[in-house]
Image (cartoon, rainbow, N blue to C red; front, side, top):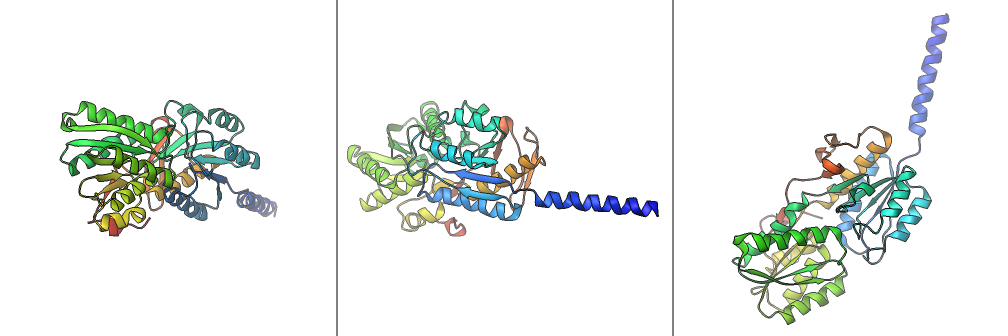
Length: 333
């Protein structure tokens, strides 16, 4: 009889513990993109949304209208005051947010840099969710354009903002590749323009490139807003046979330009997978089921196993995906 009594108490205790676990508040995640109106970030958001549906976390997203270095600060501050557990952010600056990040982390908030890291300032965030090894992005873009223009002629870069950490890393690698690899000795970088990830400004800058550099052979735009704007300008000017456009874009955004021959090929990765991976990683770290240290393997349904690397960097795929007429019909994002 006594034994049965203790079994009943133990069972009741286990039931109460289980109920408490299920009754625990869901992990609150906010994602702050660089700015609004960019379809690239919409795909990341969809990854977060789908991940949180499966995990039971609470997800919201807010963003500034423009991508200046400090434009995210008021949105970040407001979300921290709201009491979010995890801030996932695509930073507009490698260091402008450091003080806010430090205060948030001291109170237990997890800070994730998504899609771009903060070079030299990694100690101010907990982890970075990146699509690929970003050291490959710049050289891959140079090679893609070079192969289309016979590795010869004037080229230009149309970037986002002057402070954008990811674009600046890629551009530095592009310049280094052009300067040091003899394969590209006849390709000359004539200028770097900045469209601020704004469609109209990017269009104006692309038009200026065509007007100011009549011998221009190609444009590299490592930003989804810029590459679409450059393609549109080249299409309107009917110069697709003279000026090649490459860059980082989404298939849905660039499909028309590929199909009508304005653009031969462009590159990217799956931004959706970044959001999905970030959601699983954030919830796991917050709940203590994932150790945020190099060598830890994170398993994500539909994505597989991802190993945490040095400086707590996680990558969703090994190499960039190249989109052209042969494969663009296979993608929808």
